[in-house]
Length: 111
Image (tube, rainbow, N blue to C red; front, side, top):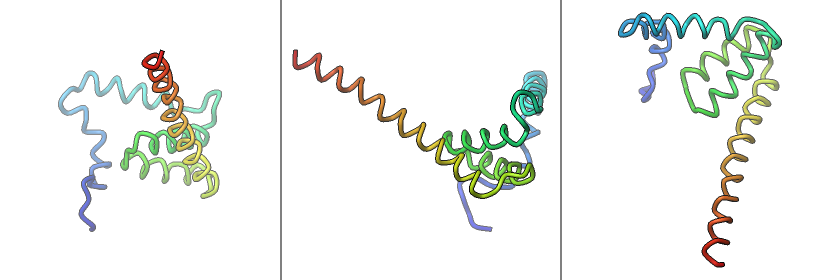
């Protein structure tokens, strides 16, 4: 196994987060499970959203988990990469729109 900062085997330990705080951990997992149940969005759509968010927050565990989950729920490579591009566009746009704050500050200083 390649040595990385994140140990892929740790993903399997996610359920153990309740070890140090059982009450809150259980509440989290109850909520987490409910969030991913089909509702207005299909389970596949929710998985693709999770995959995109995983890339935006740069969580390697989530990227691994939701790549597998998206594929299991019928998403193909093109759909998954499109979701990643959506995340990248939103993340890039969020950085750029903050340029307006800089522009406002420049205008304030030059007035």
